[in-house]
Length: 154
Image 1 (cartoon, rainbow, N blue to C red):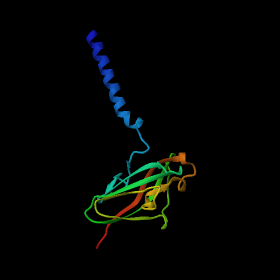
Image 2 (cartoon, helix red, strand yellow):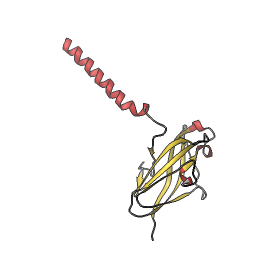
Image 3 (cartoon, rainbow, N blue to C red):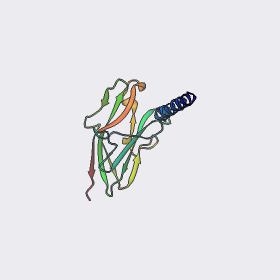
C-alpha cells in the first residue's frame, strides 16, 4: 500500500512537470522574439526559398510597429510581392489590398533583410500598427497575404 501511494505521488509529479513544460512557451513569450509569418493558406513561413518572420516592436519615438524579416535562401536574386494583414482580438482581418498597398522588394541571393525604425532602407518591412488599428490593444497577429516570389532574370 505504501509503495502504491509513493508511485501515485511520482506519477502526479511527472504529470505536473509535463504540464508545466508544455505550457512554458505560453509563459515565456518575448515580444522581441522573431515569429514565423504565415505566407500561404497552409501556414508555411517559407515559400520558394524565401523565409519570413516578424516581431512586434517599439520604435525610439514610442510608435508600435511590426518589423518583418525576409531571407532569400536561393542562389539567385528574387523580387517578392505581398500585402500586409493584421488580425484583431475579435478575429477580424484588417488588410489594405489596393494597388498602392502592394509591397515589392528585391533580395539578393543568400541575403537577409529586415525593417528598421531608424532607417528608410527596407521601410516596406516596418508596419505601423496605427495605420491598421484604432486601438493598438486590438492587435493579435501579423500575416502576409497574396505573397509572390519571382526570380530576377538577368
